[in-house]
Length: 394
Image 1 (cartoon, one colour):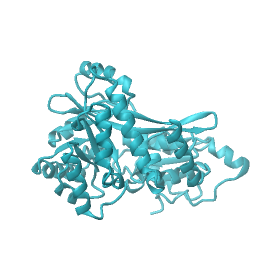
Image 2 (spheres, one colour; image 1 turned 45 degrees about the horizontal axis):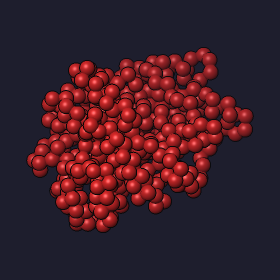
Image 3 (cartoon, helix red, strand yellow; image 1 turned 90 degrees about the vertical axis):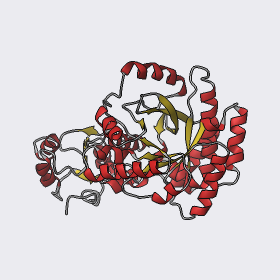
Image 4 (tube, one colour; image 1 turned 90 degrees about the horizontal axis):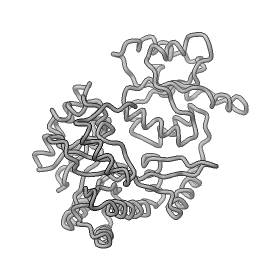
């Protein structure tokens, strides 16, 4: 099919004045997934490009074929059931169109590095060497450019706040400004270049210190993300134990989420690591359980629970296949005594869908955005006043 991610990307990139003019062109997006829109906006911010403007298929078609300057690029999810999609599909197939088209399928959306590269190509932004980025991150860790934000988690049955996920951010210097980057934009790179342990220790230190500083106004358990490499290290339990002792924190208040960036090849080794951490009193979660990559073998290990990937959760409201997978994972986890958290809850409709599937806990913008530690008491008051999840305006 001509209408695919390669359409437009392989056309010769403009250079000189044409490249600068093209970089100032408008980017349109026909995207319906709020999590995907947020991911794209963050990636564009990272490369120094203007944000994308979400539009309906009819408006995108009018801009592609109508009078006036066409947009620089069009980002879209396949939406054959939506009104106006057929006309947009036809207009976007033109290989001579000046508008560069990028289709964001699940594989591309789930690969932050590939998405970043695709957006660089569609906007004509230069691709800095990874060595420069690694050096910048190493400096950032040393100079305090890394910060934490905390996203609330609530129990669905009674709406009670039950935890926080600590999410690392990097304020990446770029000339006279700092670009705020989420973990998808730099954690895979850190893992590739031996910085995973340094990032993990910075995250653990900041999270425990900031949350303890809020007591007694707020005392919720927090979970931090650890890659497989760090989770399996024999010195991880002693390191976490020192953090807890220094902050007078019970190990049960500091949970661990196993991130999905590295596949598990040695299940017995992981089992020993999980048993060490659980034996020390830390809750353990399997992060980002999804439809695209089944990791059922992890459910045979004594994890505290699983977290359903935000894209799976978002699709479950309209996709029978995704809904069936969500229900399957919930049943499997509950059968093994595990709790289930749904990520990416962006509307009351999604809250209702995961509640009907038997999910225990909810996390997402309809509950609360990632916040600085100092803002969490205000979130508690706002959540109590809201009487339920609210639609994410993004």
